[in-house]
Image (tube, rainbow, N blue to C red; front, side):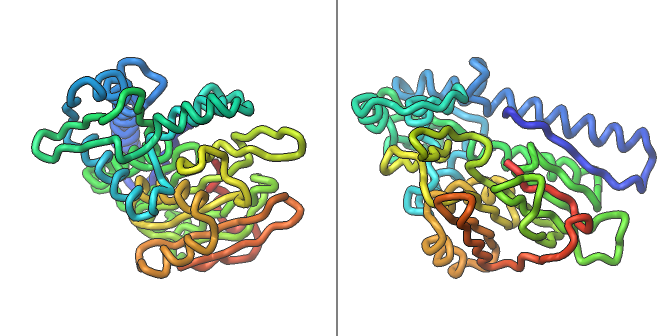
Length: 317
């Protein structure tokens, strides 16, 4: 998943047991990466991409439910989140992390192989079938969050009541409150400034919640003064412009991971309308065509100001 995973545990129990808890969680992370990665030829995702256009591919129930979640979020965001954008990601060079401007013919050919309407899920057999050759799925926009959710489940099975889990600091989950300040309302997590990810725009306070961030400051390329982000809108085939970062808080890391990408595509106004219809999701969006002129929008949450040293600086991508 091209990201480090880290678990912070409260030292409120036997040290050997803490190591057992962490070892069990990291073993789960490695297992799930072997299922979800588009870069491991033996993964479930690569199996799906190689076979589902020819015959239904039966899936483990949990992986099938993950695809159902991706399908639901695609529908609820009117297509802004789409796990079939792989051909476009490849055309723009981001799959190889070597961004480039594709030829119009190459881009058009890639767009012909994108669309969730070509992904058919069968609830009875827990299988997926592609209705068109060349379709592929990539769970990069939801997979790390899903792994974090599974790790949190594992920690709760061990009766862990205080923990923080993050993947590359772009998706985070917290259990309980931080151990050093028991009277605190929750974990205060910094929202990275897209102009300098060592600095913060402010902090969000979370308890038993998740937080995910998408931004264009790590994976992008610049050509003739224009910045091309790795986040591509499936409906146009082009990288999103006018957005710098999105941070989403909620109860499921898989969902906040996916919504961070979706809100980046949707923009500030559509995101505001989406969040106003829900009481379980909040977002901080940074908009602007250049780092010199930005606007920060907090929807359904409170972005706290103050000294950066007072909170944990997470939320980078």
